[in-house]
Length: 464
Ligand SMILES: Nc1ccn([C@@H]2O[C@H](COP(=O)(O)OP(=O)(O)OP(=O)(O)O)[C@@H](O)[C@H]2O)c(=O)n1
Image 1 (cartoon, protein in one colour):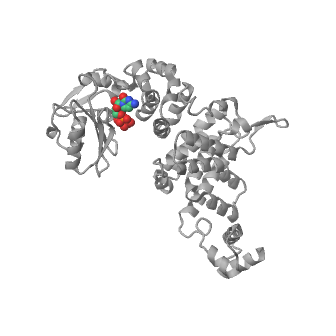
Image 2: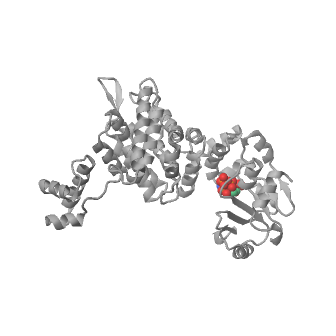
Image 3: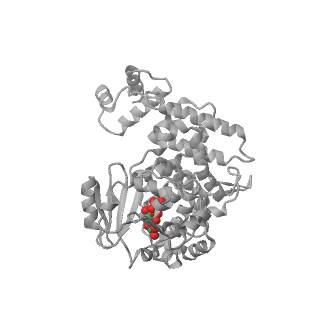
């Protein structure tokens, strides 16, 4: 037996001999083992003839694992162990294992390994394609059967660093419009995995060029009309995908400080890193409709596109059924992405400006800084000199410093007086006035004009 498969056998958290009847591992775990790729947490897909659900339920009980039926009709169930390992069991489709494999998406995903007999079944030469680093569809009809596979192709190719075989790519182009029929949730998950892959920006651009994003992200195509500008030395569409690429570079500049922030999950299940990359994809989305030719300079101007961009971003994230929280994050990234650049342009930034940015972004600040820096790195061309980038990096470091310092007066100002205290001292009724006074006190505190409770109250009195 191949050594890679041996270690996969060791990772199976039960003895396959205890399973009544034959049992085969298929899909990503076999593919990744043969490629020597490790994945954490492990996700094992088993196929077996005969009844599945009851046997898997018993196994779940024995392992103390969570149990869920994913598809009652086709008998697909999932066990989730405390360690995070997921075991999916599915009843074999068709008369035998080969006909089950023949219904799958790509040859490299159609290799089965009988874990009891120790035999490999590879009817479509998936191993040959692994060696050639090629993603090849098993059949055109399989792509049509489940059009999500069209997008999966780009995602898998980007994750594995494989090329899509030309015939397969032609089929994908031919059937691209069918992705419109797939559920938003499934498309969303593939897009997120795709954009986060190491070569995700290029794969996403290829998917767009092959027509796969036409229905889900029709806002991208109008960007093609915008050429290089005073802001970007690249045409807008190229700039956009370059920013996605540069997000990783921006994060690498601040690896220690931002790593934990970027891997944190926002309610809805995606990491901040994913949301920053989506922010990169959408940050200039409103430019085409708002751009105007300035007759004096002969250049396009994009004044006031940020809030329109935030609104368009919200619509797009709703269309893809992201959570409310994720929608709020990405819209904020799009809306505020120019602000770090504005701070860097008026060096050194005032305490008031730093305070306001920290206040408006809160825990989204590191994410915004990564997007703004990626944007800056990707505009490095004739118009933007190295000095600008040095300044942008310095600003990012400074702001992260404020953000990561507990009790920092600009990023985490101490509350001198709260709303109730203010109302009691000044005999005020609840209302927007109280909020305005509190905001004014906080800002005065950030600029050093107010340092204690009495001064805060004195300021509030003068404002009343
Ligand atoms: N739309 C789909 C989804 C899955 N599969 C098959 O089901 C297997 C398991 O699917 P999944 O767990 O979604 O993906 P993996 O291939 O395991 O890879 P990854 O976990 O990286 O997504 C795939 O390998 C493939 O054989 C398929 O044919 N068509």
